[in-house]
Amino acid sequence: MLVAPSILSADFGKLDQEIKAICDGGCDLIHVDVMDGHFVPNMTIGPVVVSPVAKAATKPLDVHLMVENNTFFVELFAPLKPEYITFHIESEKHPHRLIQKIRSLGIKPGIVLNPHTPPEAIEFLLEDLDMVLLMSVNPGFGGQKFIASVVEKAKRLKKLINERNPNCLIEVDGGVNDKNIHELKEAGVDVVVAGSYVFGNDDYSKAIKSLQI
Image (cartoon, rainbow, N blue to C red; front, side, top):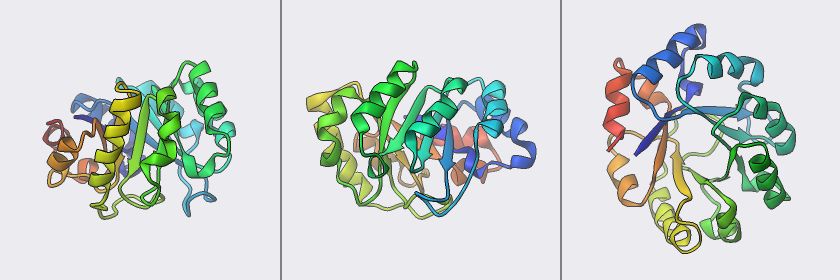
């Protein structure tokens, strides 16, 4: 299991130290939540803040867009050269076009599904994706309770992926911890986002390793 700590839960007063600590602690990706205050009822960070994160990081960035104007934000973050940029299917009228744009920028494209959105909604996009991110909380705020139905959803998605694009990863974001990590693994999940579980732990390395099963 790959682990992507979400910097939304980090201490922004010492962000460079936090980034170094999770990288030294063995994380696989650094998850960056970008919220615009329109698609979700919260606002977070832009490229001015993420740029020094990218410089301090020794692990790739995983940028998760929770925004309405996806193309604008893709162009905004592309110069930072993240490994992945994922966007919500619920906020994009032309997903295939945006997938192609992200890939043309040398970045791996992914799509995000809100808790209520079925995996079948993106069945005919799977062949063009590198990742599908399943939200296991309602997007907008960290520290929420895990929505258990995402486990069954991940199983359904895994079946579709095996049929159409076995190389596509499944990522889960929201309420992930050492209590639910095993059932997520069994459901076929490849990557987990963990914010408060990692940054709320006294030992980042121990928290990260407890999820890398």
